[in-house]
Amino acid sequence: MFTRIRHSKKYLFIILAVFVSAILPGSVRTFIRKFEHADMDHLRCAIAIKAHDDTTTTALLTGYSYDLLQRFAKAEDITLNIVLQQKGENYLDSVLLGTADVVVLPYVDTATYGGIDLSRPIDSLIVVGFAHHTFEIARKTFDKWYSDFSQTEEGRQVRARFFTTAAPSKRKTGGYAGPYDDLIKKYADQIGWDWRMLAALVYQESHFKIEATSYRGARGLMQMMPSTASGLGTSDLINPEESIKAGAKYLDKLQKMFRKIAASKIEREKMTLAAYNAGEGRILDCINFARLKGVDPSTWDAIVSVIPEMREETILDVDTVKLGVFKGYETIAYVNKVTQVYSQFCRLCPEN
Image (tube, helix red, strand yellow):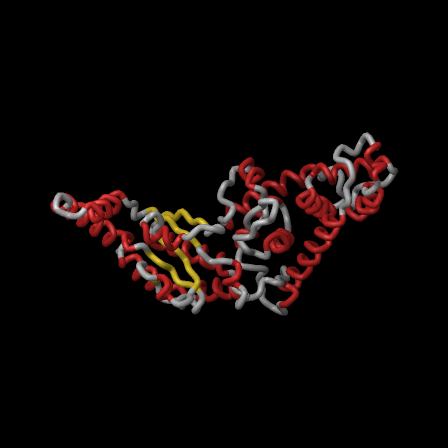
């Protein structure tokens, strides 16, 4: 229905442009030309929610907004290009100027959002704004879709997973790790991991926030560097599936390095976690140094036991250590934290 109305209105405006463009003011003719070339099946979307907009709630608002837009697009057979508002950018202006089609905004005094068609408030937290050139029907269709979706069992479950605190230590029950369990299960299975371990890594990296960005430039749920992700075939790190897929590929690459070293699956996973945090070169240095010291490096604890010596300047004289001094404090804490969260997710999501 949305598609038929959208296209019929598009053609009506094109015909109108042919008859009246000669007599209309230049600014109006410009609008009609822009409308004529607008691709109503491919919408440019922005999520303009800042970090402080989440401070009054445990909701993962950016991820929830992204998820809703994707579900709406699938239901209406629309393709979306979704971006997150960066510092210094104003996508409300972009929508008003017609260079963006849809923007998700915090639900505040909606009078400040004049000039765009706003959806009904979603949980009194966000609204979806539509540019006028996408037709009022787009906003009405979204309102109807969300009203129906929010009443379904799937809609209630989606909302619960985005609106319940992600911290596993603060949840007594649940049956789920976070909002992306299905994706995590899919890619954990591909690399032979317990999905709860992969979920623990995702939680430790980003707390399930798709907008997470480190000071080094790592992005997304798996906090991957764009250059690393690009080498694995991924460029859109705010997309939950793309981020998890790229992260799983990288983990699989890492764990293969330790397959003949680790004494067990769990030891291989701990080494892989350490390499994900510090880089494979650092962990291979630790393994080579352990062997030099006569220590069997088949367990993570054995590797940790030689790290204190790797903090000393004398390590620079060891030929088998390629990258020099390695403090290791952060990496040791990282492996401990991920395995601790894994235990908490096992409690919340027991496997039969």
